[in-house]
Length: 411
Image (tube, rainbow, N blue to C red; front, side, top):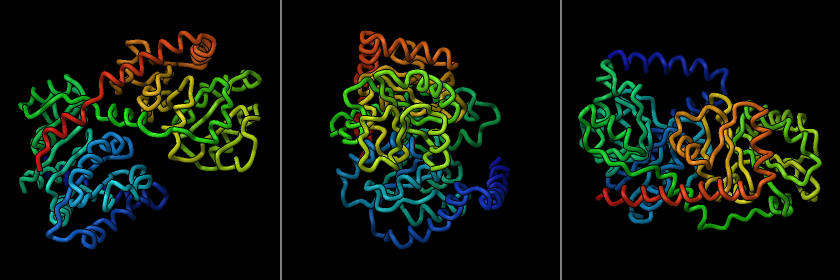
């Protein structure tokens, strides 16, 4: 099986290089991986003590960050190598203060794994959630390196738990310990005789809880909101737009403010979005010295503000669930104690399923349901408070994963 996997990686590498000629995102990854070993050779000496933190993309980085931050503060003499597989993580966090160097993870070949680990020679490695690369983990196990997986989630339909999944299954045994988000994941691991496992919960609860400890004020959002009721549509995709654009147009003359933070912030997409809105609309990129209070809709066509902008919301809609791209982080608005609406595709997100069950989050299947659900929340302050309280209490109850993980780590 390992031979077939390695052949598959080789074929994939060729295919990616060809496709990169026509795809900007893939080209970023191809070009970035060409620089990885050069960065490591120039940035790490053989006598350096190092941490290696690996994340698939931006979401996993946000999950791991509370742990990374504490380790960085506790061991300031250690160099930190932060790796990403996806350009969407690397490009946003390539200058992250948490790391001494940020690199793309090389493709998962035996030669790349050995070279990478020989250069980094990590004293401790932390993988986040689910990015399992068999050749890297095989070399980690061979070199007997301290390695853990945090905030892990497993499902019974994954290859680890199938009769044909022996090769992938063996990769998990490279981890000294796995910290899962839920009991079901722990049970699945124990079913394959992996017993070095603890249920710590999701480190994102600690991450978003920290948001309450900082100054979340954003002057231009404060000017735009102007003490009116405010709905924030966060990390939205075209499928999400279809749910709410009509609602915005029908309610543009009412005392309501709408903030749209699209996942795609390219000028062409923002222009298309604006063209569909029949109300006074302005974007971050054109705000300048405008009197923002005169506008009904604000398009946040920039990054880095959304987690703070949620603090101004009375209601949030979190995107990704209307289509198949994947639901974005609902914990970010939940920590501020506001009700949340999401799309219908949420089954792979345990926090969404739980919050739907207990009443803090409402799933929406179509524009009619959306209009009914949002109208009810806008009209009923008591309903907003009840659902918002459910969400904030859920965050408080589930934080603490970072403490449990750090108690395990011994350098």
